[in-house]
Image 1: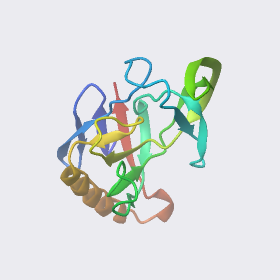
Image 2: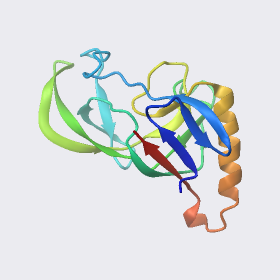
Image 3: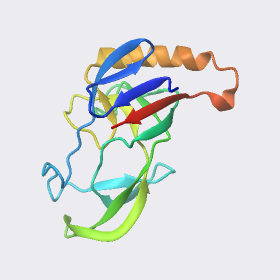
Image 4: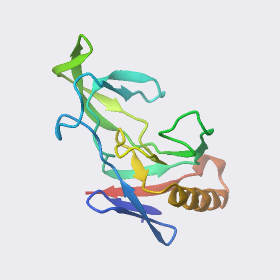
Length: 165
């Protein structure tokens, strides 16, 4: 059984005996919210920018959730004060970009990484799970750190999160 559970069809992530209000809304070609000139790039396994694509919601499956990373105030308004990394990834279609605008799919699929959990004042993410309130994120981070500190093996310091439809 997973330590953290989230159904994409619900607005609550369950963890540490609590429910946290979350969303995972993306702007893409499917919902018509991505402007053709606002190019999304995949993220490689090494955290480097990848190829042009269209974002998708956090992938279904069981993923590892790692120790939160503190993001200094004023350095990244989309991720501060904490980014909670996972090993989640999924295949996305590469898109052809001409003159800075989407033109269509290339027919090639690439693996996209960098799916995590964080707070943002923006209404959308690029596929991450977004806490609705900064306070909830801080409670989650404290509980996650406490749980990770209880794991003796430093190579196994992660919790499992099940993401369901």
